[in-house]
Image (tube, rainbow, N blue to C red; front, side, top):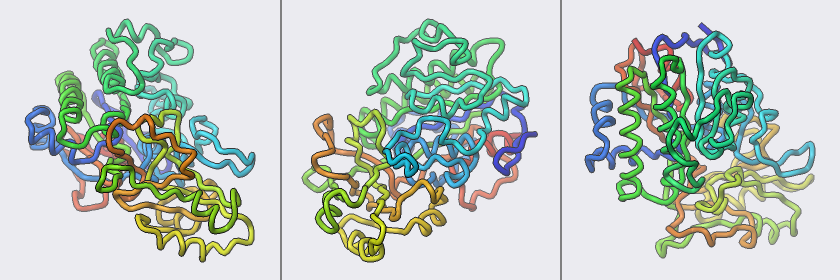
Length: 405
């Protein structure tokens, strides 16, 4: 047994794979089942354990992947976005560096207990966080050709997988993750525990039930079926869901909050931070449904909050203390106000700061409470669980290690 962040986990007694399918709104699975594209998943839904869980808010990649691998919310592990305003330095920075991580991961502790652990992520932005202090294998599909024994615990990945390194903006980047997972599991010395994390490029571009989405889930189903046939326990969840963020004319439905605050209280006096921001913005233009606002000293924050709350498309505005408690966030890493948009709306900074020229399909994005529901599926009938309780995506390792017969 190991104890990590106040939760106890048994060591894996059979090969165990936890899969985070980036952007997997539950309807993607329902539609792919209805269209007959996912025979393995259809069987698992009937014979395994099927739950719907809540991800953490903001419903972005970094906070949720780190919640899954720590078994805890951002208030514990500290990763509250892909991007933040570092008050100490006065700079806006990416949260890719492990220095931002405040808690150990289940993965590292399992490895310390003697288990063989492997982590494969699509984008390299997550690799150092997921692999923090991990004595095992950890590499990204994005930079698989650069993997080395010293840095990643493995080399020759591209040759072993038999696929070229895909474009970061492609379904093949996620396929490489699954193909690499199957490759690692096919050897005599296979991982005791493996964590696979994909990219949501497809989900940003294709709605549930469309040809592009069905093709992705058909591909995924094939690889998961292979892992199942190898005797793996598989837990499938997601970091967040995905929704259309458009007006009826299909144009992006955006509240440009920095522009509004500049009009209300003065140019560049307040600062709007969009935690969705990362190096891969072509498919979403750095537009999501969650923002944090830093106000100057002496501001009437209640009055500003009320004006924002009155805007069309805004679902809620909370103070730092309220948001930290309600969303389980680290209070020292969020602004004076937390703003969440409604299902079809995203929040931007200024019109001039968002390049939407890369959008070749109506905008789909995430970040709000409207993208909180995610699947939590296990290919085993679990014991001793209460299906009616509130499940979280960060219960994945608890289910995999503590409840599988």
